[in-house]
Image (cartoon, rainbow, N blue to C red; front, top):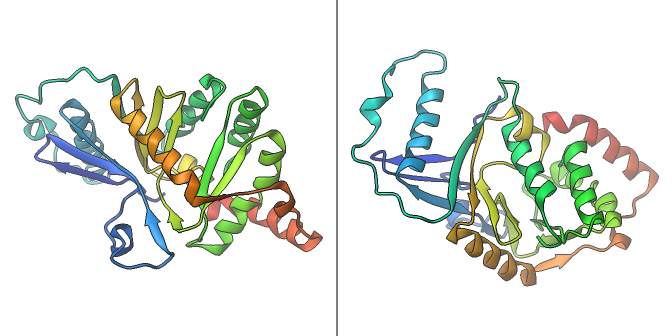
Length: 256
């Protein structure tokens, strides 16, 4: 059970989360897979306190050393500003609730005609496209792990046939984990659309609704699409050995 969350909390008042780790490729000081594109979100006030609690809960998970979190809560907190809903959330593989998957599925279920997965997520994406939602997925064009890249591509054909549009980011590796729906709802976090992130990792994210940063994320997607190559159905046909390999990779996806 990997801790895949990315959390920085400063003085209990400011927090950052998203896809960014502490490594040179994330700031493009070193280019391992072409240009590295990522995303992060800065929050203040009560939202930052949410991330403080997430961190302390994990810090104290097995050998508790801090029992009173009030010492870490700054007073007074930043005066709230009216800017929609900003809801940080955490997901754990040790409880009975798949929070990250539920957030993603709810976005798909509520989406109106605009915008390595599990079968439920795959069906949700296809069903949204079939009912007229403009579903677009942007994935890396240069892989960091070739087998995972092959696994991701094995899902392309059924998605394309259902009407989902798929793009590959050609300048390099796309590591951002973001969703945007209807210019109203967005997610920024550490959560990939794969089995490990949704069911086996400790993860975190921020749900935004009617918030000013939803438009920023939307505009970033629009600016990114011209840098991508749209995948066509004819590119997804594979040989019998390739089909067998894809089936094996799907069986092994929880380990990848």
